[in-house]
Length: 78
Image (cartoon, rainbow, N blue to C red; front, side, top):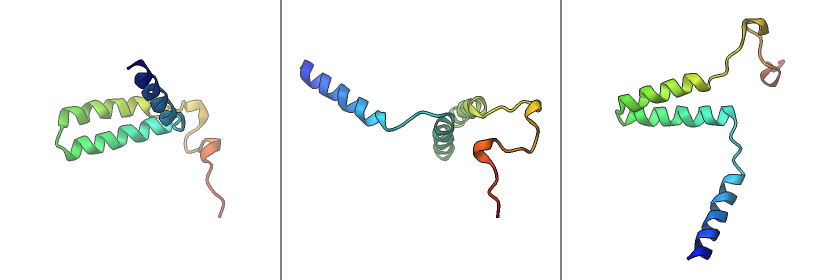
């Protein structure tokens, strides 16, 4: 039994290895869950997810300047 448990644990670990949790990935997951909750009519769950989404959104200080894109999201010159 211990061998099966160990192999299952290793398989789960390997499956998660390719997915890095970034702020953007977490936000995307929360948005997808909120959309599913809304479609299912689960208002209370949707409200909870909205709060989590607000927390996950990046916050920029006034010193960074308004209207300026961060370096990784700089506008593409046409």
